[in-house]
Every structure is written in C-alpha cells, then in structure tokens.
Length: 261
Image (cartoon, rainbow, N blue to C red):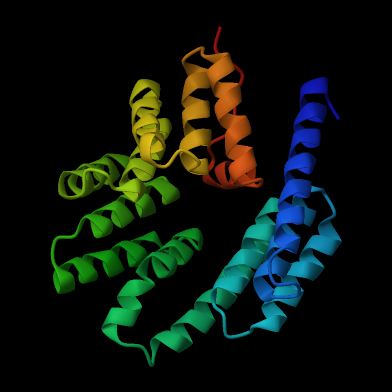
C-alpha cells in the first residue's frame, strides 16, 4: 500500500465484502444471483481469478438471463479489465435483443432502462437516447422517461445541461422521483456544483436513507465543501449499503478527492 489511508480503505472494503458474503450465504446457495454476489465479494477482496470464475459460473447457470453477462462485465470493470467488460456487455445485449424479437412493446418498455444503459456503457449513447425519445412518443410525457434520459446523459458524461433539463422535467412531473434526484445530483457533481449536489442527495436520503448513490454522492460533495466528518460518515454508510460503490463511482469517473485547502 502507498500510504496508511489506502491500507485502511482496503481493510474497510474487505470488511464490507465479508459482511455482504455472510448475507449472501443466507440466500439460495448456488443460484446465479448468489454466484454473481460472490464474484463481486471476491473482486473487492482482490481475488481476481476466483471472482471471474464465480461470474462465469453465474452466467453458465442461467444463460438466458441477459442481466448476468452485464453483471460479469461490472465485475471485470472492478478488476480493471475494461475491454473484456465491454465484450461481456455486448454478450448481454445480444441475449437481450434475441428476447426483444419476441417481446411486446409493453415488455420492451419494462426493460428500457436496462437496454439503454447497456448501450450507454458501450458508447452507443445516441441510440440509447433515441430509444427513450421513441418511448416518449409512444407512451406520452412520463417522469420516469425524462429521468432515464437524464441518467443516460450523466452516465455518458455528454450534454449535461440537457440532462439537467430532463431531470428538472422529471421532478416537475414526479417531485419525489428517486431516479431523477440521483441523476440530477450526479449531474451537479459533474458540473462541480457542490451545494446543489448536496441538496439533491439530502432530499433523496430523507425518504431513501440507505440509498448508496445518495450517500456516496453527498459524501463527495461534502468533501469539496470542507465537511470532512460528514463526508466520511456518508461514504462509510454508502459502503455498508453497497460494498462495491467505490467501483461504481470510479466507473462513472467520479472519484474521491483530497479536500481543497
């Protein structure tokens, strides 16, 4: 380890992983979902080959589940293997698109968020946005669709101002939209609008107090607002809620930074 802080962080991640692993053991042993949980635990512990073997076993257990190759891709991203992760995302997308050929419009709409975010992770953001635009034309003005379009832009880190406008529209339709508050908070982090980000994440946490995105995002905002104690508490709580939350924010390009002087 380069420094004591990094060493302590590693211990925290391992402890969170162990707790999650114990919880996972109470679920259905050997199921694809429990195998994928185990893969994430092993990745957080730095047991890379074991993590990948568990992810592979999960995909093999239920080859028609299009979410599992995406989970495998996320594990690969935890391991820093981005090119392999993209191939796993493409595999999940292929399985999904085969299912889509026989699905109804309502079934496709139900999985729209999955579809568009996998496309976004593969760099196909315009196609993802076009799908949301088409669903808005089909089903009318719905807060969840504006929130999704905002989320896509924030995930891809493109057209953030347009994303903010979509989130504002979503919240005008559904003032308590969890998805819109998360996405707008993340957009404010990208814009370095720390006060606005803290406000949105705090609003989210009033009715979803264990939301890991809200906790971690508020922690990042508080770091930049010189609230070191509040930041540390939020980030620790986020890790308790989702032990691989650091990897999720790393994937988004939103990292912890030293406090500004």
